[in-house]
Length: 445
Ligand SMILES: Nc1ccc(Br)nc1
Image (cartoon, rainbow, N blue to C red; front, side, top):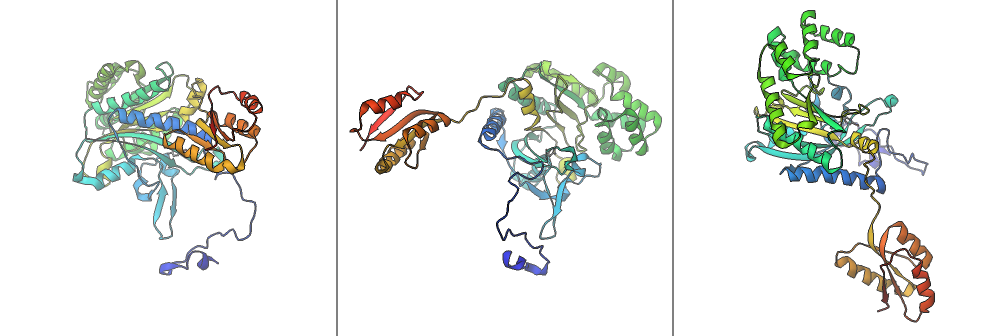
């Protein structure tokens, strides 16, 4: 059956037999665990959200890009022990290739920039909205897919790039009614860690691992953090100092601990100054504990959070100046962010800001007699040719049915195609029951 179904095994490899639903049986009509369907009412909210993502991106002059959901596994394998790797949705395809459903978009974007090489001129300002995956044991009942909005700037080493990215997210929040009293951004820089490593002689190659551990600082007990840091070989004294660095709450305290203004503090001071110019100072605060849990960040990092502390991070991003060179590309500076489609919806629900998005159609066209279906079709086509939306009733239905459907599809105007000879009084009585005060009555043609 297998060879018949998939045309026999090519190139001699053993092809796993496809599961063929030979006889009809009750299949599970729910989507696979951790995934979602988008029926019309959910698709309207998703389109509303994604349209805001895309309109803000275009407002800032960014170009849309996209990549395959399926990538080679190697694109996401980094040695730093990130959660994103532990949850990689990876498998071996029929060509024995190791592939993965992308857990994020940044590596694909980096791959495309390298592929484009000198054929593109820097800086690049790209955005994408794409589905990302993780494989988590469903015991935690969490989702395995979400859609992420990404904006990235490739080729700008200055902090002006990060400042613009945060501005674009603030613009998005304002468009959907979220204010600085609902949401803020915790901002820090991983150059703090670099300067600390230099000061305490910690080997550079521990950078990614230490970031991943520090990212858990608010999620697991501090003793566990110390233990995991101890496993990296960092001395106890350095660990104590390190935890002090990640607990400071102001740039001045940081300056004291690091013994002066290095690159990290200079970058952060510039970002806060630019925030004034962009007009979003009230949205951001320094928080040394932000490391974002991805090993490729190298500079400023930021994370959007809900001030009531009820939800997980809303979005996050930062500078990743080394990522392209780790893939064999040139050492091109880059920064970007990812913004998921789930937490923001929870926040909108919390703030009672979900939009009312009913179905809308301008016309419902119906033939009152079977032999007028052709006339109704001609009228419907004429309306569509003029750019009007039309729900054409495709079979002969009683008027009562038509008005019920008109109400359900929220039609603004019923267009009823009938013969003039029909008694007007009965007709008007039925029409007057319809809520809309707008209607056109087309005589038969
Ligand atoms: N990276 C990632 C992918 C999918 C989901 Br749901 N969450 C995070």
